[in-house]
Every structure is written in structure tokens, then in C-alpha cells.
Length: 95
Image (cartoon, rainbow, N blue to C red; front, side, top):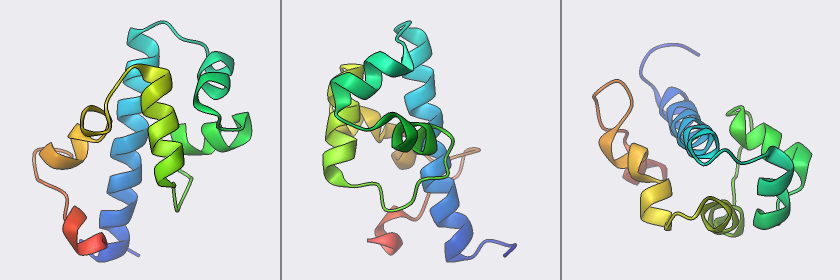
């Protein structure tokens, strides 16, 4: 699917979440094993989230990831508010 449809917006949301999490892991010099353990997310699922492949990321997973990274949920999700490539993502349409 190409263009600016809902599917692309959903992919952008997951990509923005993945990019934010990877930036924070790198900035804090954390290991993926440590993040998996601290977040309560199984390593294969964490890899999928960080690669932007995971779908249906749960609130529990978001909360666990935020906790492991030392971020509040608003901080973790901040890129979704500001958008990708300068344009806001239509998050409200997805909910």
C-alpha cells in the first residue's frame, strides 16, 4: 500500500515509537537484554518493537518500555505528537 492512507500512518506510528526507543537505549547505553528484563517484554517481542515490525503494542508493553528507559509514557510517545519528517501523525484517527 502506498500513499498517505491509514496503513501508512499506522506504519509511521510504529516506526516513530521504534526510533524513539532505540535513541533512548543508545543514549542511556543500555543493553537489549537489560531493557527486556526491566520492561518485562520478551526479547523477541522487544526486537520486533524496536525494528518497527510489532503491531498491537499493548499499554503494558509501552509502560514497561517506558519504565525500563526511565521515561514517562508522554516522553516515550512524544515523537508521535510532533510527527515524523515534520508533519504530525494522525494518532487520533487510529484510536
